[in-house]
Image (cartoon, rainbow, N blue to C red; front, top):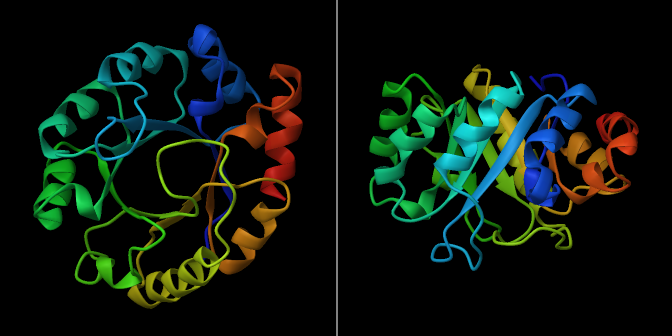
Length: 219
C-alpha cells in the first residue's frame, strides 16, 4: 500500500558554503527526509561529501537522514556513515559482490537498509531481498550529477516495484531520484512512488521559496 508522500530534498543542490543553514531551512520548510548523496568519483563520475560532513550536519536537523551511497566498494564505509548519524543507508546492487550481506551489515548497525536500482538495473535485482529492505530507490537518471533529465522508462519500473512491495505485505519506502520536478513529481506518485528526492526543484528560489516548493512537489 502506497504510504503518505514524503519529500527528500537532495542537498547536492544546496549552497555548499552554507550547508548547515540550508539543512535547517529545508527542515523548517517541511522536508520529511534530508537526502545526502555520497559520490566517490569511481562508482559514479563525481565526488561529493563523506561521513565527516554527514556527522557535521547531524546537529542541524532531527529529520531522517537518508544517505545514498554511490561508492564502491561500499562495505568498508557503512559503519562510518552509521556512526555519523545516517538513519537510512542505501547502496547500489552493483557496488558490492554480496548485496544481501551488505544489507545485513546495515541492519546490524541499527539502521534502515535500502537498495538503489540504476536505470538499466532490472526490478529482479530485488528478488530475495524485499524481506530485508526498508527502502527501494529507483534512479530516474544515471547517477553522478544533479540537474539531469528524467528517464521516462523508470515509471514502469516504479509501477512494477509498487506491485511487488504491495504483494509482500511489508512497509517499504518506494523512492525515486532524478529529474523530479513539478511536472514529473505527480507522474512518479501516480506510478506508485511515495518518497520523492528533489534537488533543483526544492532549492530553486532560495530559502524563502523552499516551503512552497516542497508543498507543490508533495501535490
